[in-house]
Image 1 (tube, one colour):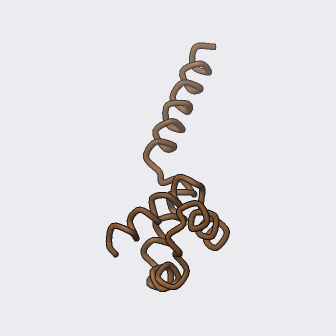
Image 2 (cartoon, rainbow, N blue to C red):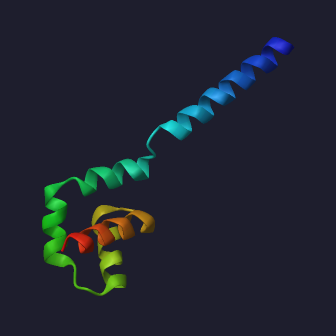
Length: 80
C-alpha cells in the first residue's frame, strides 16, 4: 500500500513539474504569432488607434487570448 501511495506522489510531483516548466499552448501561440514578420505587417496595416477595436481584431485574426492580444498590441505600439 505504501509503495502505491509513494508512486502516486512521485507521479503527481512529476506532472506538476512538467506543467510548470512547459510552455502553455496559449503562450506558444503568442510567441509564434509575435515572431512572425507577417504579423507585424498586418498590425501596421490594421491597427487603428482605437484600443478596444484593435484588441477585438487581433483576437479574431490570430486567435489569441485577451492577455496575449494586449501584450502584442502594447509591444507593437511601443515599437511604433
